[in-house]
Amino acid sequence: MTAENMPSTQAKNTYDVIVVGGGPGGNSTAMFLHKKGYRVLLLDKAKYPRDKICGDAISGKSVGMLKELGIEHEMEKLDTAKVYGLVFSSPEGKMLEIPFPVKDGEGHTKARGYVCRRIVFDNFLFSHTKKMVDAKEEFQVTDLIWDNDTVVGVKGFDMNTKKEYEYKAKFVIGADGATSLVANKVGAEKVPDEHLCMATRVYYEGISGMTPNIEIHFIDSVMPGYFWIFPLENGKANVGLGMVSTDRQKKGVNLVAETERVIVEHPLFKERFKNAKKLTDVKGWTLPFGSFKRKLHGKGWFLVGDAASLVDPFSGEGVGNAMTSGKYVSEIIDEAFKTNNFMQEHLSQYDTRLWKEIGPELHTSYMLQKMGRHKWLLNMVIGKASRSKEVRDTISGMLVNEEARKSFISPMFYVKLLLA
Ligand SMILES: Cc1cc2nc3c(=O)[nH]c(=O)nc-3n(C[C@H](O)[C@H](O)[C@H](O)COP(=O)(O)OP(=O)(O)OC[C@H]3O[C@@H](n4cnc5c(N)ncnc54)[C@H](O)[C@@H]3O)c2cc1C
Image (cartoon, rainbow, N blue to C red):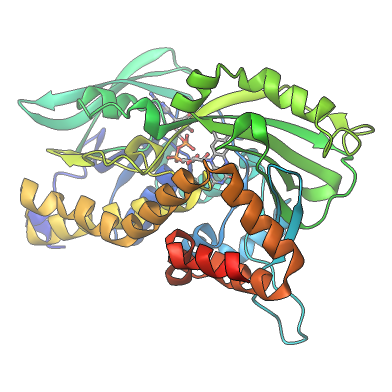
């Protein structure tokens, strides 16, 4: 970037970019921008380490982003569990174990991703961000600062000094999660209920029958959602369930009560939880699905992560897409400064390029979510796969390959299964 294209970065309380929110979306945005040489301020209302209600699954996509940031190897030092495959159960109770197809030199299944409590994972990200950019905890952003129709900064409250402050920047990034203040203030379209999911999380230890696999159980009462058990370090586990908001409303399900009921009463789980210890209360939070396309840019602002509504509508994964959006927004901002082009036409490239990258996958997942409403289909697929190694191998390949995953939404896949 040339000196004349740079804003007045040396002025006190003035930055190139302000990032609101220090989750995976905000931290990766700040780190990618720092690597490109920008002066960044990241603000979060929480004190770190802070919890985030989540399934804690850190997928291969998230690990890929950590690699690009140069911090992937440090995951090994954190308290995590490595994941080697998936276990599914069908609504009629058939179990299916599918190891990931990738093998190491000795023919053993290789791990793909981790389960890492977000209190650990986000603190890991935030501690790296803090080394690179100005980062303030316990700072609640309360409003945006406008110059006519352009966002030029934020106002907020520092919980330590108990004072209000203003910070200015060329761009403000809303990385402030599902209830984003930035998205609300810029008038972003509300995510409709049919594209929102409500989900719960509770930590346990000592559940019997745990394996190094992620468990996804399509149980009747929360269909087309699912109940999960994800292994954590030292015999702990992340347990929860989720449902699309409109389905939850229609069925009148109280998700916290249902989580507790499934654990105590469901025939597949009651024995497994009999001697397990509950470590936390059951808590719930919202997932804004990427089946809804929100406008992600405007004059002086961008949205990333949950604020941008990018969660996978089938798996419920949002960490990888939050980090991916951080990477893409940093590229657009870099180009804007380098070419001195802050026009809408250029900024809109963020939406275009991000959707080109993650749109097809989100579309496949949305189709799968719709198909998951058919109990007989899930019973058929899981039933056939539990009896046939060939079908299991096919599904295993499809789980790790995006192109192959599209077969899940092809009628021919199901016709072949019926004939198998
Ligand atoms: C029950 C549940 C299970 C899930 N399971 C998984 C899973 O297993 N794997 C997966 O990949 N995804 C999962 N997700 C989705 C995932 O949690 C989110 O997609 C991810 O956290 C999005 O990251 P983010 O950085 O956009 O937002 P967040 O992680 O929500 O971070 C937002 C940050 O903004 C801060 N903030 C908010 N408002 C302000 C303000 N006004 N001023 C200053 N700071 C502010 C908050 O303190 C917070 O630190 C799950 C979600 C839920 C609810």
